[in-house]
Length: 413
Image (tube, rainbow, N blue to C red; front, side):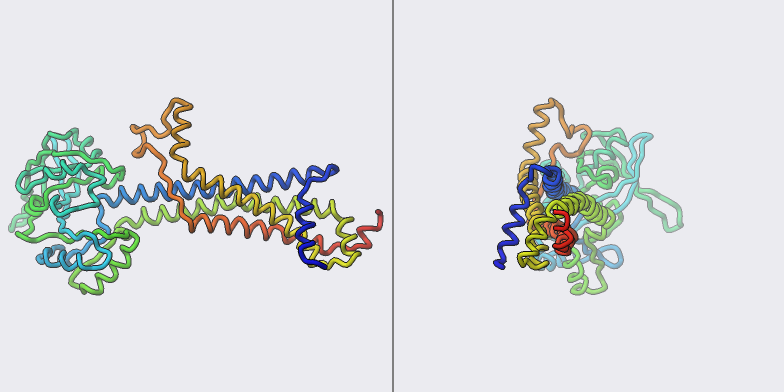
């Protein structure tokens, strides 16, 4: 028998029958469910990609992609080492830094602070998105100026133009505590939306920070390395550790921010599984519609078997019928999901205009728009999963159809 006959009959069976519109209704619901599930998966994962990029940009605005520090906690050869690191493929910047802890005091208000010393003239491209370059340029050696996180400034009741005292605990040779107190002007306040930075970080010129923390002239705590590809950080860190040896300690941002990095990946994976269940439920509605279709077409199946159609060909009829429902639903969901993911920001703007209210008010959220990044690999995985589930859902009803006995089906006809 000519093979396309099974496909032809399967496509014909998709057309509604007047005596049993309920089967067609269930098929339509299955198709719509698959389309909505695929659309939801594409849109949600694209938005999560966008938020993930936004989170990483904010997180890495003050965090180095890779850090190289001395085993003793400081480096004497920072200039030579930075030049060596700049020659490594994939490295865009390598600049010295000083890092330490202290206490910020303003009257009766005090707060622990992480002091980060940097050289504004050294580039620091990762800071450009978080800090005003003109404010950053005010950090000059010996000027005793600092830039602090917004939440830290609020807790100390200070603002730009005020001053606060930095206290560094030190011990005398006799073992008595003799803290160093230094008054610093507040040159600016930054807010990146990451609690670690906004609540406890203050930026100083590298020379001022080194003097505060008791480092010798020319000494720094380490080198912060900026990469062209942030996801290459673990690989580059391993390579640098092997190259530099045990005299240096090499870290990367995925270890320093491991909890946040793992949390975002797990959250995205769980969201994919949860939304895929929507597609699975819709796909397995195909089972119900095909089981009813098989019961409705028992006479047709018996006649086809009587005239010589093999069970495998009968099975193929209903596989085609169910697969077409899955394919059409997946394509509809693909088109809808891609369109929504690419235009979600403009659509939200239209909703805000229509309702007259802001969905992401600036005084509540750190962002005022919904970022979205469509990734071809993820879209392909979603489409593939939906199609596979749809085909799997056809197998049981199709096998039942193939097992139909012509004599039994025609007994009462």
